[in-house]
Image: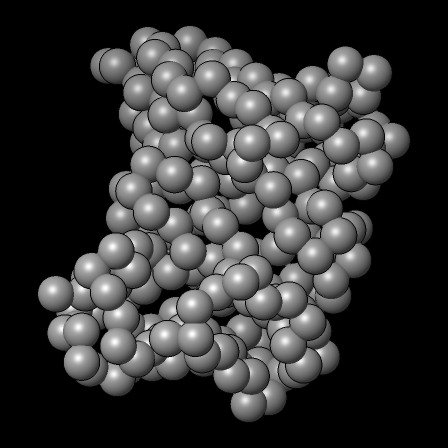
Length: 114
Length: 109
């Protein structure tokens, strides 16, 4: 099983809404990542969790709040987003953070902020 | 993705070979990856190569690595219409995966 599962696949939310994106993997990976991908652009790293602790926050605005409840789950809580936050949000996992490990991506959540 | 460069477009005929090229700048990268992204979908890991290898073959895919020139290529043999997608070259750099801008492969029947 090399699957990273993200839910929901699509999400439309208003600027005053609170929503959460979910990501799950059962490969025993201890590093999990959130990426943001705008149209026709490569993915950009947002957060890295390593052994359930936040190890990287790439200067992401506080309206994005990550959470790692256990080693298999990664959430991204959204609040008071802006229309420019509309993008494909990708979750990935790897065995650990080291450079020698491959990362598997989920199918993404396509977020539209109206 | 500014440290990993790829050409943006490639168009081939069905049955031909496709070659997608990539250059990277960090010689300390130990693994280099190719991902495929179809419209509206996530990234699918196609293959990867360890930096001490020159070549890796996996069915229709051949990856060539020229470490001296920091050049990576992905060859797809017998390209099919289902191969039409964006292909991202990536290097794992400590905690981050650095991506190229992606090459849009169009396969014409």
